[in-house]
Image (cartoon, rainbow, N blue to C red):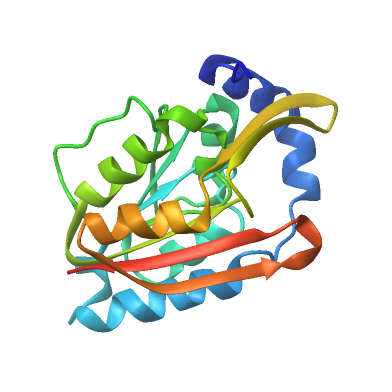
Length: 206
């Protein structure tokens, strides 16, 4: 299967940004964002000394806003210029940048990386590479939370009438990569059985 290019994914998100913002649940993912913050923030005397990267921040609501309300310094990354524009208006106490997670590079490290429903747009053959790159952005004792599919594979489906590519490694593959990167898995849940195994994985870097 040929993945839809990052430029096309960004373009399609631009086209559905208004509808996406209207239809996005205000509760999905928030319980796991709370768990992520509970694992992360007690390590700091002051929340604003904690840095978080939110990959695939979308419009910023509800999850980027929830992360930023904790007092942490949050950077949101998204491939859609229109999503970033909305996020800047919705979450003024965070900073945002447009970019493709496959090619983006950071010179600095983060205490936490949060990636809700975003890494599944990465081409299947780049999944391992990107997961390893992200773990390399974590400070010691840093926390990574991301979502994945229920099994190894790839597909194309429509959202609001536009095609989007999705891929996932298997649960065992993700766990093996994280262990190899010196990250201890804390959460590995199927959070929505009705979605064919939508999985939440959270780990801490040793």
